[in-house]
Image 1 (tube, rainbow, N blue to C red):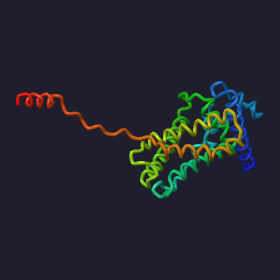
Image 2 (cartoon, rainbow, N blue to C red; image 1 turned 90 degrees about the vertical axis):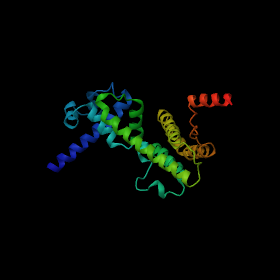
Image 3 (cartoon, rainbow, N blue to C red; image 1 turned 180 degrees about the vertical axis):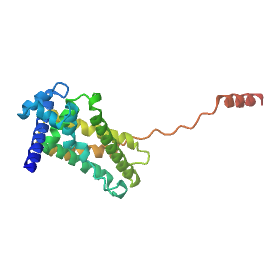
Image 4 (spheres, one colour; image 1 turned 60 degrees about the horizontal axis):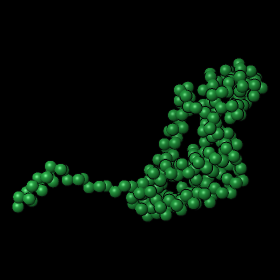
Length: 233
């Protein structure tokens, strides 16, 4: 009996999280209420409060249950230093992220809620911090592969790898934002390889460069003194 009760509680929790995805996506997090979620799940508000202390806790659990696109981009077990074709890995990983988004309904729903239907107020700070940490980790991994591309000669030595990583992030997020607004899984799946190949080809052809270091100017006093002596001669 206890086992059945645990299973029922787990099923109720999943039903509430499913309902939260639907309600938050339809109404936005700020305008949705726990009563809305309970109604969508066919349950009572008491059932919601049994599992989640408030809307912020429900939102956090909904996000924790899903994997956001950029979280799928890298295998932390494979250091960049071991990669022979770092730009190829970036291209293939980008394609994998886009294909995952095109095929995973839960990822699509949570991505849409997090990026289009949510204002990260103080009560959602924990979720915002988690996403920021994951974003920073992803960016560092992209930079590591770009620096590896410099080492193996695929990019010039003065490549601004941080700027290149920012450009790749903006490129991919732009694709994902636009696609979630007007989803067409077949179109994204078909075009993802060409889009990522285009980005990598552009990066190789015209990588962003670090500004050259400018030699320090001679102090004015020294220049004046030097000019005075020269005139005296």
